[in-house]
Length: 112
Length: 320
Image 1 (cartoon, one colour):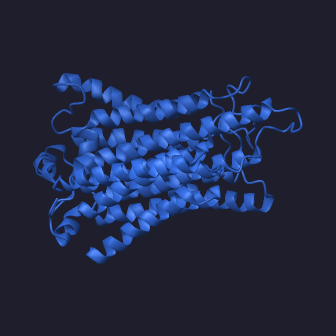
Image 2: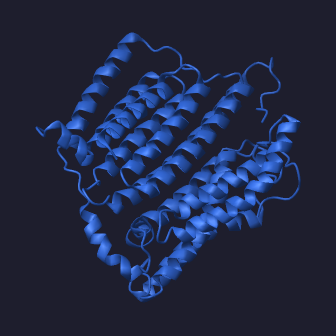
C-alpha cells in the first residue's frame, strides 16, 4: 500500500486501478439509471472493469500471464452472450407492453 | 509503452465510460461505449495481451455495439427512446457513497496484490508438447479446455434462450430482416458485402491458422465471420435463415460437438480432454476451425435476435 508512485504505475497497477474505478462507475450507473438498456450497458462496463483488473494483475516485468488472458477472452464471449439475451428480453418486453396498450397504435411490431 | 501514454489512455477510458453511462441520448451512449471498447483494446495492447485486445475490439466493442444499436432502434420503433428517467437525490447520494466506498476497498485490494506473471513460467515449458506457440491458445484449448468447452455451450445456450423469446406463432421463423430500408443504401451494403464476405472468410481462416503461433484464434475468427455474414444480411445478399433449417442447426452445433467428441475420445489417451501425444496441434486446429464456423453463425444470429411473426427473407436461400 505504501509503494512509491512510479513503482505503482510501472508495475501494471495503473490499469488495475482503472478497472476498479470502472467497476464503481458501472455499479453507480446500474443503480441510478432507470432504463434497462442503459443498465445493460452499465453491466458491460462493470464487466470490462473486472476483466481489466484480472488481466493487468498478470502483467509481469517480462511477460503477461496467459491464464488470465484466456479467462478474460472467455469472459468477453460470455458477456456478449448475456448482452444478446438481455437485449432480446428488453425488446420483447417493450413489444408486449406496446401490444397491451389500447389500440391507438396497431403496428406494434418494430420495423427493421 | 511510456507511462504518460498509459496515464492518458486510462483517463480516456474512464472519460468515455463516464459519457457512455451518463449521457442522455441512448445512441450517443452506445457510440461512446464502442469508443470505450476500442480504447480498452489499446489498453490490452499496452498490457502486451494482443489476443485479448483483438477479442475486446471485435466482440466487446463491435458485436456488443451492434447489438445495442439494434435493440435501441427496435425500442425507438415502439416509441421508447431509452432515455433514463431522473432518480431521486437520496438514491443518487446513497449510491455514490456506496460505490465510492466499494471502489476504495477494491483499489486497496488491487494494490495489495503485486502484478506478476507466475503462471507464464509454468505454461511456457509445456508448450513444445502441444506443438503450438501461442500460449493463450494453449491455455484455451489444452490446459483449460474445460472452460472453453463450457463457454461454447454457453454461447449456444444464449442463442436458444434468445430464440425461446419468440412470440406465439413466430416459431420456427426468421428474425426481423436487418436489411436497410433505404433502397440505394441497401444496394451499396449488398455490393459491399459481396466483396467483404470472401475477404472475411479468408481472414477468419487465416486468424485460426495463425492463432496457433501468433495472436488470433477461434473466437476472433468467428467474430470476423459473423461481421461478414451480418453485413451481407443487411445488404440483402443473404437472407437470415429460418430457425429450423437442418443445415443451420448443423453449423451451430458442429464446433461444440466436435470439441466434445475430441474430449471424449481423449478418455482413451488418459482422460477427458486429453490429447494423444503428437496429435495435439492437429486436434486443436480441427476444433478451432469448426468452433470458428459455429461461433460465427451463432454470433450473427444472436445479433439478429428473436424470430418475429411474418418475417420473410429477401430470398429463399439461407446461409450455410
